[in-house]
Image (cartoon, rainbow, N blue to C red; front, side, top):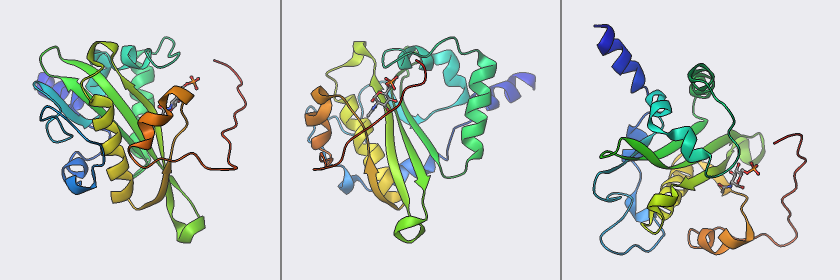
Length: 192
Ligand code: 16G
């Protein structure tokens, strides 16, 4: 019984997985080759919401390929996961698991920011897009972005935005993202 409860808890998803199933495939924008697509990410690869058990599946090690993560204990992870989950309709972290190795090998986050503007609309923010360096070139970044863009539209966002390095601008263009004339990304960093 304890095993069952433990397993059940491990599989707690950040958001309802049915939300991904209802996405309209005609909204996917990228061109794919070799039969790969968001519906068929590849052999042994499964796309789904982040789960609590992903702490043990290398999720944070994957994020370390993007930026500084620091020492995050399981307790820290569960605490943050629970906070995100309790913000209904806000945090959508989509991961790709390699079922063969049991490791998380890709991830991207959509945050749905609630607004008063645009008739109490919402803005989607794409964050923390990362594919393991061992899996680059398998079109997994395209899959993650296609899913998040379709998801932001499905969730009713009036726009979706992201910030990225110059070298990645071309990649994001294929999903419809455009650099905006006269607009700048600004930041003030307090610590790393
Ligand atoms: C990139 C990410 C951003 C992430 C940041 C981390 C995308 C589209 N952009 O800009 O989401 O938070 O890197 O870098 O994934 P930092 O640690 O320097 O803030």
